Image (tube, rainbow, N blue to C red; front, side, top):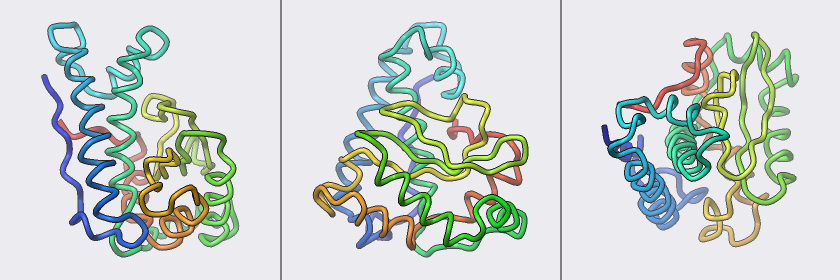
Amino acid sequence: MAFALIDLPYPDTALEPAVSANTLSFHYGKHHQAYIDKMNAAIEGTDHADKSMEDIVAAARGSNQGLFNNAAQSWNHAFYWHSMAAEETAPSDELKAKIDAAFGSVEELKTQLKDRGAGHFASGWVWLAEKNGELSIEETHDGDTLADSGFNPLLTVDVWEHAYYLDHQNKRPAYLDAVVGSKLNWAFASENLARGSAWTYPA
């Protein structure tokens, strides 16, 4: 089957000024669409054609770098759009308790997410993830993903330059302050924690 680009879960102006409609027009409308198109072209007529995106990522890891990059980036971006919200939501009681246990407070977690994102060398992703009941901040480089990692990803922040350059130029910390500071979708993270397994790309 061919995969479709998911709909954004909010209007394209909803994240401004942290992420502008102009950035989304390129990041979502062009970059994400290109990953989807290249993945669909690569799986057409192959054994991967009827697999879930998560299974394609897992099958391509270590054996087909081109397919892996496009499938993983397709998954990462869809997860990233859901990791943000127009208005910051509140974590569930369960998530709040785990955040407090692992980081001391939501504000301290935000500080650590921003610090890890700012310090991440070159392109990649910074994640809040759960494994064996414990929360941690994880980093993946370039197009790598937690989709097939054994972690349950709860939220992610894209630190590729195209995520922020039109709005913040080279100031990645300014982008992180804006997104992590007020646009994280804690309701989505809470749902991911309660489900207990990694989010799946909509069929």
